[in-house]
Amino acid sequence: MNIAITDDHEIIREGLKKIIAKHNDLNIVAEASNVQELTTVLDKNNVDLVILDISLPEKSGLDFIEDIKQRNPKIKILIFSIFPEEKFAKRALSMGADGYISKNAKPSEIIEAIRKIESGGKYIKTELLEELFLRPAGAGLKTAHEILSNREFEVLRHLAKGRKIGEIAEILGLSVNTIASYKTRIQEKLNIKTTAGLIRYAIDNDLVEKY
Image (cartoon, rainbow, N blue to C red; front, top):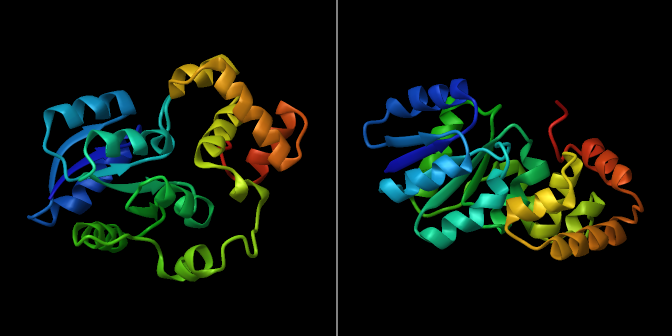
């Protein structure tokens, strides 16, 4: 299995390479620190699995899942993130990812996730399966942002990082009017009237980095 690692921290990439190198049938063919570099990697290499961080410069890993799948639907995606599974796993898989694992995971869990995806399955921590996927649709929602669409969710995260509507439009390749419409819908769904309120909501719910 040919693997490409995408993370903006070199120490994380090096750690993953050491873990994966112990398995002769798993090959690290390339690495990238952002989605622009990953685009080049995918153009130049035969990649079966992308290990992808969410927190990348400019465009996030979540933003890029659809791009990867459109480029080659056969490429598998394992999200490897500092954000806990209960916050992002269901969202990431609904966007097209094949697995989600926290950076707090043990090395053995990382290999377990890769093997699960390699065999055609989806990987998520067992204890989250019932909570995230087996409860009735719409039942027991824990947080208001669960009703946001995937695009609305990403626009919320960009707004929470202090980005202006024009910046978000450029990053996502959409018009300013479209982003403004998303912002309005987000405010309506969350019943939050100001941008400052959206930022506070995202921070309080661990939807963006606090550093």
